[in-house]
Image (cartoon, rainbow, N blue to C red; front, side, top):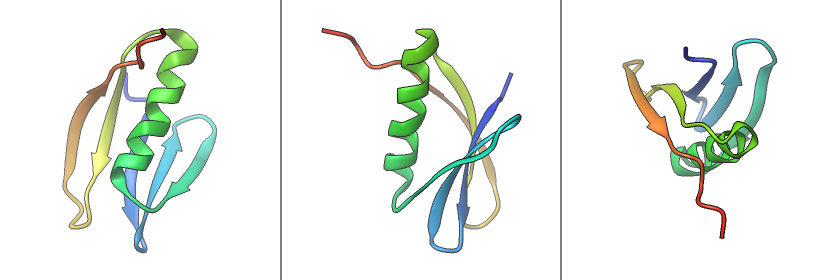
Length: 69
C-alpha cells in the first residue's frame, strides 16, 4: 500500500520507491510531496505515502493527483 516514502536525511528530503529506490532529493518536504503528486498524475490515483521526519517518527498522508485543467 505504501510504495513511496519521504524521508528526512542529512538536511534533505528523499523520495524513495519501494521497488526502484531513491527517486529524488529535495530541499524541502513540500518539494518532495509535490514530486509525489507528479507520480499520482501517472495513475490518476491518490498516493498513500509514509513520511519520516527529522526525529525519526513516521506519519501517513495521502497526496491527491493535481487537477488537470
